[in-house]
Image (cartoon, rainbow, N blue to C red; front, side, top):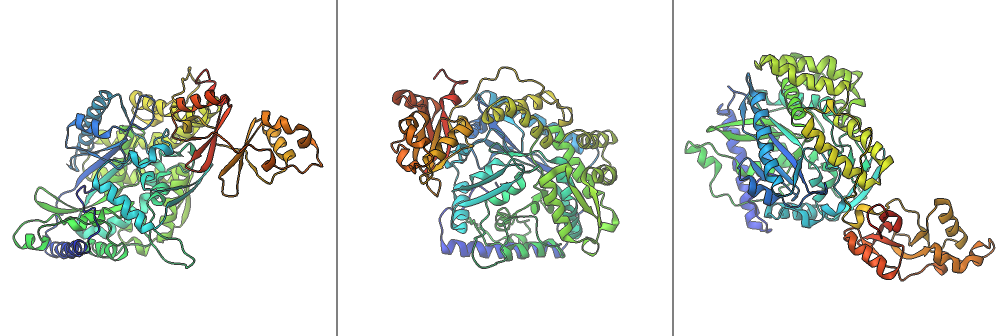
Length: 623
């Protein structure tokens, strides 16, 4: 999540001072570009690995800081949530065995994380969205307790002016609202960096945009969120909506999301790019900066452009330009931010090699893309790939072609040329590109996950299916090099539910009645759906009462008389015991036993979201 030391208080003078440094940084970058100071005689690659921590019940852990302390390695850093960590890999010169070196370091650091996690009763998992995450783990108590995260949450909430509203539509629908940016913490990615020659920045950036759709479609690994089957790469929609600060109004306004693919081709230099970004996106975070970057330049020192990088870090382009300093020299690079974490480290490295090969193998006819392609087609490809993965149809140079065919017949050969151009070892080229080829011919991470989640749901309650799926993901990551080798589940061994909160076990697909419904209708609701408990709600979904089968018997004659107008309001009981989704399961069971009741309506604050019955508890507790 970038720079940790930021100003957490709103101070007008501090903001003015920061903006002055932002303008100084832009001036310094322009000077370095004009004086040919930016490195252009070497190409390096780098990566960032985000990963999840899960506890003994396969649910999000809460001990990232403890695990980080046990790892004790500067390559590791925190993320927004207490159940995520990040590895920053060392930059490597792009030649011969570069990818082998990156892979060896990645696997070594993952082993280090695994050891530290195991010593803290925790496991690590590579997955774009953790299947077992629930809304409970997205409360602020799971936010990493650092000033930057609290500050970012506050400025984004203030900019939004209301709660964050999200609406995802796939095989299932998930309309939901949240009061913080914590939904963003569901996302974990494998971010890839490629150093770019400054004079080739515009052509490279536009080419990165052009290939984004098919590359994403070949790498999808995040089909599930809160138990709902949504997009093949749900992270794309989730990231944008979870921190979207645009305000909805009656007027039609052209507002740009801070998570964006962009709206047009880019022309100009990287300096022009940053000028546009500063113009479009207001500064969210500031920090105290002691020295002028331009003064540093005049003194012969290469500046880090701290203000510019902080501002850039709050604009989440899927292909993001970056400035950095390495070995005392300034450089620019493109950061690919759309690739998910997992399914395995080998899959991630194959994604990396595939993308870098494409970037370096760019055919000459794509040097001036704005003259040959419509930006809208490229953006549409990206959205379609996120939605439907390898089942997408791509618009490629004016022709419609299946994504898998495009990758297999066109893009893999281009990538091979690019890797050969950079003199990558032939064995490594074949190894990594074969991983992509096998995945397209067999199964992507998203396809495997959907197939096996559907199978598990036929055998288990939804929450148990998500836990079983998470456990199987971990087993497969430990047992297989690549997702194309993963077998589909054919059977389920005895599965002991790991439900610990009411929200994990409740039934969330509800049949409810309104207070004005006829008593006869409420009786039929219960008969038709074979249920014994019927919550009664008002127009905004707030629980106002409960009708139970036993209670209904007191009104038997009146209810069954079709001519009787007795209503649900007259039948229901209003003194109803309830639970919250975060209520520990043992407390809910104790409450049901104490009052000899067969169900607990479940609330998220005041909103009815589920019901917990004795039937739900039978396979977990002898209630």
